[in-house]
Amino acid sequence: MADILVHVDHADGDVRKPTLELLTLARRLGDPVAVHLGPGAEAAAPVLAEHGAVRILAADAPEFTDYLVAPKVDALASAVDAVSPAAVLLASSAEAKEIAARLAVRLGSGLITDAVDLTQGDEGPLAVQSVFAAEFTTVSRVTRGIPVITVKPNSAAPEAAPAAGALEELAVSFGPLATGTRVVSREPRQSTGRPELTEAAIVVSGGRGVNGAENFALIEALADSLGAAVGASRAAVDAGWYPHSSQVGQTGKTVSPQLYIATGISGAIQHRAGMQTSKTIVAINKDSEAPIFELADYGVVGDLFTVVPALTDEITSRTS
Ligand SMILES: Cc1cc2nc3c(=O)[nH]c(=O)nc-3n(C[C@H](O)[C@H](O)[C@H](O)COP(=O)(O)OP(=O)(O)OC[C@H]3O[C@@H](n4cnc5c(N)ncnc54)[C@H](O)[C@@H]3O)c2cc1C
Image 1 (cartoon, rainbow, N blue to C red):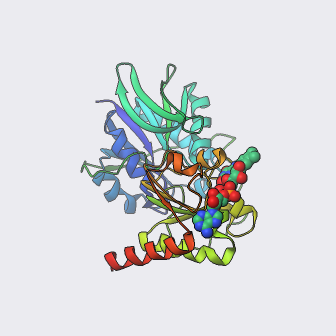
Image 2 (cartoon, helix red, strand yellow; image 1 turned 90 degrees about the vertical axis):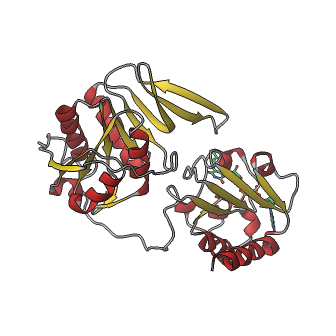
Image 3 (tube, helix red, strand yellow; image 1 turned 90 degrees about the horizontal axis):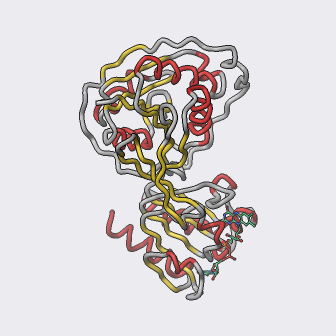
């Protein structure tokens, strides 16, 4: 079987869920070979092996943490040289998409971003994309070089499939561009204790109907009852009720959770563009004509100030 390189997204060896999804998808295409860059490879190895990594190529150097993406491109290019894979897979984060684009240029390869599914075709991997605000589904294939493909979080459920996961050192020599952009300071984001918006399996979003920053406590309570992330429409963000980093939509983040609950959101095309590929959509809106109901799988016509606390209470009573 051909080797499929999987770039590991991690924080000091704490592997993030999209990487486990990539390993699951990679197994459809060949033997997953994980590439772990930066500290923590030994800590990461068991979970990577558990999800199907036959080998783990690891490299650690200050360049990975002290500089922006270029050193990782050098390392992935070295891994490609070492393994001659049939494809390289990365998660669709902003950083990984930049790495993917630079790597594809370096390899003279075709690039596909934001795939939502992968299958093996007769002539290589086929990538499914959801385009034009999810109005169309396309299937594409890289026709030149080693396919470099980024996959959106939540495109597959991670499945365990234990493999050898042999940890090997990856030799990397950094080119002159590697140290072109240095990180000069770092401040950790204040943790909310909730999952990252773009990776969360459940997202609860609030819009203009929430009617004030203080009322977002209702949305947070519902989110917490489900272990969900909190999102917001641009109207809510522009009003200053919730941080810009939580905006879902065309000019915000794209989410594709298993469950998306839209509360007090009308469903403008620009909002839909960021959440339309969610597996199940629930809308709570007091206007039965709101466009969000056109794409909702389940709709509640009602006042969110009544419906949301009742829903939170019901979920809490069933899960506690
Ligand atoms: C270039 C461009 C980019 C954009 N990018 C984005 C983007 O990334 N993300 C985004 O979200 N928008 C984006 N927008 C804005 C978008 O067009 C809409 O204006 C915005 O999504 C509306 O947000 P909303 O649904 O919260 O507000 P509204 O459209 O005002 O809808 C509020 C909804 O709340 C309901 N409601 C009110 N009170 C209650 C209540 N008590 N209980 C239940 N329901 C209630 C109302 O019936 C209504 O349907 C963009 C616009 C442009 C032009």
